[in-house]
Image 1 (cartoon, one colour):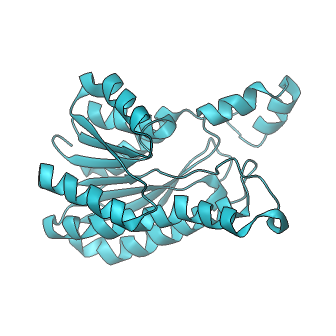
Image 2 (cartoon, helix red, strand yellow):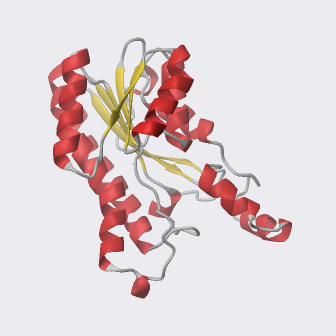
Length: 251
């Protein structure tokens, strides 16, 4: 993947940070995107010795900001080869359907699904011209099954990411552009670590019973899946959902 150019949204921490790290180790030029310029600066400072990495502070739920991001990257590098749509999350919302406010619902949909649509919308024309591209959308086990930590809004958004992935994969199949999704299970991000610390050993054991491997996943394991789907070795794989969840969902 030497000298490919990648945009990674939600790149400042957790899974996104490890995706940036591994792509840099694969000699990919990385543009990390997030809302917090401070966090992005810290990321670039930490990972800058691994390869060429820059950042762009943007709200990827807003079309005008995504268009500006894509225009800037295209102008600087002349190409965009890889797009990893990692922005989103459950936003800590854990409510039953009757208690979710309309704005809470809309926020979850915008953060997870609309952001993915907008980034694809503006990057796809570039990939179609070069007739090569890799798009990896980060969905969730919640989009395949249920969520223990989120809500129906989060499940709906992540299920929507899967539907979008399949349709766009079909649309781009003749252009040498693959589009796939990854559905992580319970991954040891900072939010999950905080949750875990507040549980006793019995609660942790009960929760891990739903994962046949009996442990939490690591952000690096999601990054490895992303790197594979972005490689030439995955050139005949498109429209799939790769479950990385320790066996907690098999289907």
